[in-house]
Figure 1 (cartoon, chains in turn brown, blue):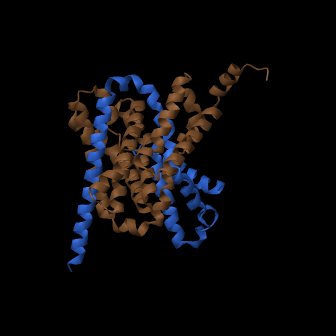
Figure 2 (cartoon, rainbow over the protein chains, first blue to last red):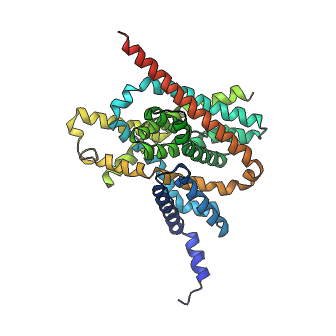
Figure 3 (spheres, chains in turn orange, yellow):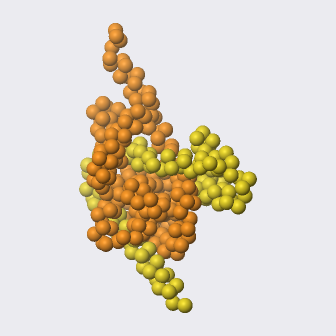
Length: 240
Length: 128
């Protein structure tokens, strides 16, 4: 090889191949560790993949847009994955239909608590108004939350970060919290996980129990709907 | 596999067109989800539909494959945290504490409401 290794790096670091491969390899490693620890909450594969990739970007001085040019192929699949939730929903239709009323009431209560608690706390902590607005839709899945933030004139990239932080914390807390509270109804546990922590909570719920995963997926998709209607309303009521 | 994945994408595409066309504040993939659900239910009633991706568990397997790796899909957006390090250095602790309290409150409120309502329903159905 007569070629300068630096020019190879320049080429690779600008191509989507490197960043797509890295995302998949780091996730595969983090997921293997999570499996080896029998899905311990703290071995959350999303959390560990993010800091490892983030650290690598910083050490190599790579910008986020350069990374995203490769990783966008993975990011894109969030939409199809939402559509795919129709399948577990269909397969568990009997369990779901039997619990339709508890789900709808819990949806409205949970969604209001998610929005009001974060807006009130952020205001009380004296955070700047744009930050408060960016945190408000944090319990819904990234794509939807960023759309809400945009329509409020907030900062969508900060919203994306708070959505992921919320999802990771929810996924880590939910199992010990529910065990300690003595809740054994996996429908209720899953529904709460999906409502509070969207897709990351749903991924966690599918790891713990199949029925929990289904209810989590339903909560996540219904909450995407309810939150996009409630956030603008809550902002006008709470911040005037 | 390709046909099944095409069906999922097609549902999402129709959802996006519908939502944007009518300017609804609903995410397109959620409409796509409902559309796929309707198709699956329709298949139970019309055997004519049980072919291609809707026959032989095609779309079921493709969906399971996608959902088995749901965690992976959040990594690209999550790495966006590197763009916000200055804000996090300044306000990070407050933001993390607020989000943590809010997520615990949301989990407890949701699970409690779900359990209370389902117990009330069970009690109501026991009484004739």
